[in-house]
Image 1 (tube, rainbow, N blue to C red):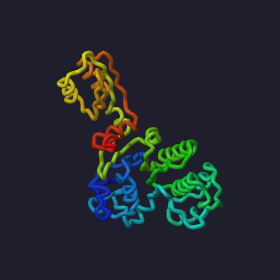
Image 2: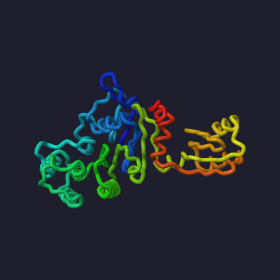
Image 3: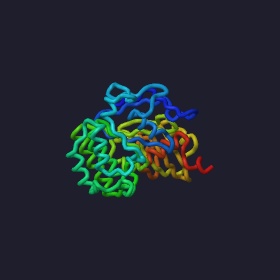
Length: 303
């Protein structure tokens, strides 16, 4: 299990992560989302033991990963820009990973090379961005880690390769109880892949929740009222529903509320709308709504 306890990381005067706390259970696929510069990559590098804490602590299986070879042996990190040895090919990198990770499997390496269709003798610097990404994933997965950390792993992969990666990772999670933490801006890819998600913004945690519970607990609704609602009725709505966002346009009200569908429909019905509908939000819509609630929205950026 991964435990993040009041963890703080600074770079000179910049606080990249500010006293964040949450847990990531074993055997789950955890999606890490957030605004640009929110601290996602910093957190992943902290989890794999690259950075020492400036406050609080990180525990993986009860131990700090920093300067801890035993824990690092169980954690593999694929960064946004994978590093390769000069003039290396896949075989060269495989030999390096074999020496570093005790869980290395030659058979799994050969199987993955076959599935991704990469030439083991081809120089990695001659490969496309997507092929280099595949090479990094092959080495990481063949090391058979207990914890796999992925940063923008879908970037550069075509749709077929993205689906192949999801299939392989999901199989390893099911077979070996591997834990995956994946940071990505591609929320549509995460939506059908992750079972937990955490949102961070400006170095702090906005929420951390099981994905299905999160989506069932926040809904958008539209309703038309004749005559249009008065201000006291709109205020009553705000009091009854934990509203993240509310817009009015004539007789129509659009809102996003942190309530289940039944509650939203019941509250709206008490105001006798001419028409109303309630829908769950996609992960991307949840992200936008929650970010707007903390002041990160398009109108403020453009103003």
